[in-house]
Length: 442
Ligand code: C2O
Ligand code: CU
Ligand code: CU
Image (tube, rainbow, N blue to C red; front, side, top):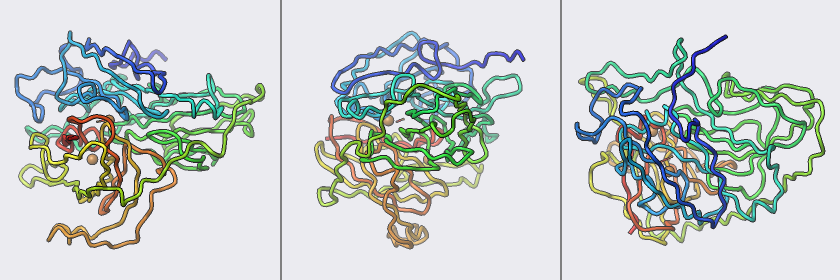
C-alpha cells in the first residue's frame, strides 16, 4: 500500500537524528542550527506556560541528556533560539562511556518538539569498554523506542484538552510504537550475540520489555554506563529517558522469529538467520567497577516533593516540584565537589522519572510512606520496608523512577561545573507544565 509520508522534524534530515559516535576525553563542538519552519505543525495555539505572548511559536534549544556539559552549552530551557539562529555547544566528553541522547529542551514547547522528532542518540566510548570485546560494528544496534499517535491519514496527532486556556494533557500515549522511527520493524540477525542500546524516547509511555518467547537477555549498562557485571533478565522496565545497554544471544534461536514486546504491544521483530559466521565477541562477567558512594560523605539531605493539584474550577491539573513553579527563585544550590542526598516524596498518583542535568548519581533506596501524614504536618512516616535499588539500577544513573506514595533516595556527587542547570520530571507533558525547576551549583 502507498502510505503518505508522515511529517516529522529531525536533525540533518533524519528522525531520530544521527547517532553521535564519540570518545571519552575527546571534546566536541556541535553547531545546532534551527532551520525549522516558522510555524509549528502541532497544535500550540495558546500562550505557552512561563512565556510572553510575544514569544515566537517555533523555538528550539538542544540538550545533551547525561552529558557533563558546561552550563552555557547544556541547553538551558530559556536559552532557546528561533529559526535562522543557531548555537554552538561545547561537549567536553570528560566522562565514562555511556549511552546518552540529545533532544530539544525549549521552554514550554519541549514536549511538542520532541514529539515532532527532535531527538537522537549520542554514544561515548572509552578504553575500559573497548577492552571488553562486546559485540560491535553491525552487531551493535541503537534502538530509540517511542510511541506516537498516528491518524488515519498517517500524520502525527498531538491531543489537546478541552479545558479553555489550559489545553495541555497530562500524558500523551500513542497508538503505535516506533523503533528508530519505524512502526512494527524487523531486524535480520545472525544466530550470535548482539549489543542493543535501548532508549525510551517516549513522551510519557513506560515500557516493560521482554521477548515473546521468554528469551533472556543480559543488561550490561544503564543511563550512565556499564554495570559492574551483567544482569540476566527476562523483563526490563524503562521509564521515559532511561537507557539500557543489553546483550542478547540469538545463537540458540537459529531460524526462528522472536518479538520484542512491552506487555501486549509489539515493539520489533528479530528474524534469526539459520546460520552465521563465528562469534568472536565476549560477554565478560566483570564490566566496570562501580564504587558505591557512602551515605556518610553527603554534606546535605534535601527533602523534595512531587505534587499535583486538581483545580476544581476547571478540572485541570497542576504538577510541580516542591510546590514551586519554574519562575520562582532557585532553591536547590549544592556546592561544587560536594555530595548530597536528594529524597523525593511523591505525593501524586503516578511514577515520575526524575532527571538531573550535569550529574550522575546512585539510587539508594525506596520506602513507602503515609502520604496523609505528610499532607497534615510534613512528617515522613514510613509504612513498608526499605527497598534497595533494583539490580538494573545498581550502576550510575541520571534518571530515577519516583513511585507514588514513596520516598525515593538518591546520592549525588555534584562534579563538573558551577552554574545554572535544571532538574525535572521526564514525562515531557509534566516537564513543560511546571514540573521542572532550575538548580544552581555554587
Ligand atoms: Cu532529557 Cu532535561 O532532559
Ligand atoms: Cu538531561
Ligand atoms: Cu511527572
